[in-house]
Image 1 (cartoon, rainbow, N blue to C red):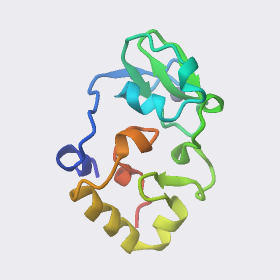
Image 2 (image 1 turned 30 degrees about the horizontal axis):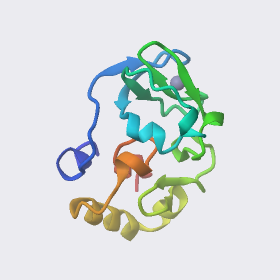
Image 3 (image 1 turned 30 degrees about the vertical axis):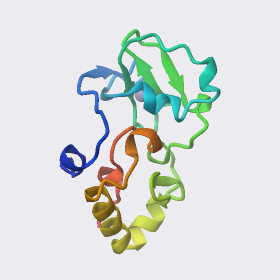
Image 4 (image 1 turned 180 degrees about the vertical axis):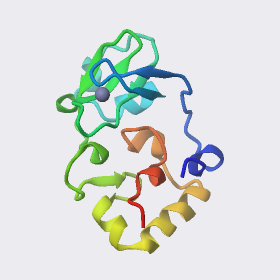
Length: 141
Ligand SMILES: [Zn+2]
């Protein structure tokens, strides 16, 4: 499910990767725009003009980290990151307000998101804390 966004979404993906300083796994970049849409009090955030990355590990408290290994934790965001939560009641699709639970129960919900993504109606870069299309986060049917 990695092909969903490459052609259809308009988000500016950052393609470099970096290791999360806490769990040591490699993750892809996010734009500064994405961070500003989810961090608490974004006016207080000091953007260090470096690359930032998104950690989606539910076991890891870090959401964003910088090239300099500085971290932004879950508690520093105003958005609940569904893919990092145990419960499936939290959103996975932030453009259309869909939880993992709803997605599992409604195959047509995924079809809707696929369709709207193709139509460029999604706003993943700003609305999804990962900065990327949510389709890869949908539960397997
Ligand atoms: Zn991590």
